[in-house]
Length: 62
Image (cartoon, rainbow, N blue to C red; front, side):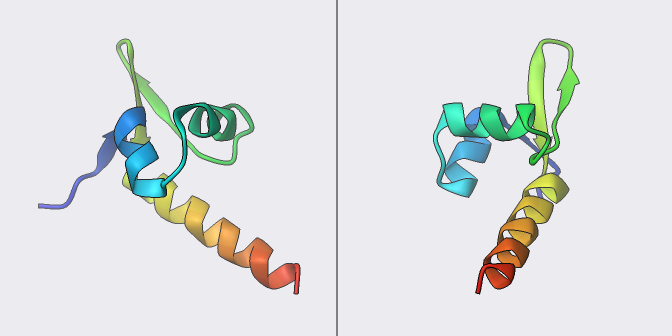
């Protein structure tokens, strides 16, 4: 079964980014997240969408 949600610390490992950068992306609406109680979760689809956004920006910069 594939993971559907990641805690911020887990998302940092998946993305290879620091905790502060992940929160910056969330605040800047570049990475979607949800709150469940006191826990901030990042959907797996949001990580996929963010990576696709980076790829599109990389192609546009060429």
